[in-house]
Image (tube, one colour):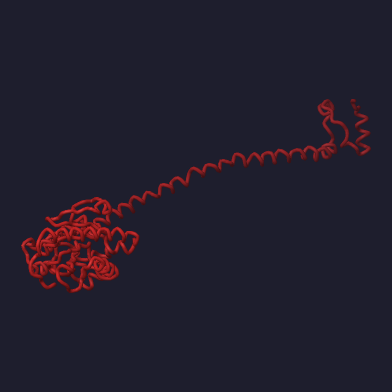
Length: 312
């Protein structure tokens, strides 16, 4: 339905211009009056707020480019473990706790007991001489049938100057007593001679280093040559490695009779290890029984070794 100009004027006079239909032809033919524009303006502006919300919602979506930081900063931080190799290299620098070697006394292989004891007391063949309290030469009967070889002096041995003291020494005493032996004064057949691979205590009771063992080895071999034991009981990994020149696990070397300079050698666990692993005491007992069996065979095959000498 089309409205005439007169009808539109009547509607305006009645105050209802807001409800009159807006026809395109009428809009093109006659521009609306200022009053109509004023009335229509609220309608025209009411839809316009809609676009801004649309733009507001669109604005965050492009800002989703916040994803950009995700790949950026964690990655460089992950590369910071790079210093870790430096720490490992520092760890490698620890083994070069290098052993400073010095000259050994000449003629160890021909020394008698007093000369050998003096040579050990004054030894400067490695850097352990700088940290020791005193050397631990050995103790027992110098013609004992049994010779026991340990690893290295500990803190108490370093203070006292004798091998196998403290709890490990108490356990050794009980082990010896079980096979009829003692460290107290007794005839050679009942007493033992005890010596260590190292004559000086390593700092903080660390493991002996190969150069230290090599420097001390002639002293131990000369002690064996002077004692001339019927059987040697090697106690602990470093004693075994030094005497047998073997890197096999101690467990694989047990139960067999080895030979060093013509002397039977039996391998067993160190008393300090047995204190930490009491379940292996039964294995150590087997080793003692094997050593006693070897000793009895030696006594049966050869006469007494001559007059008893007093222990020193």
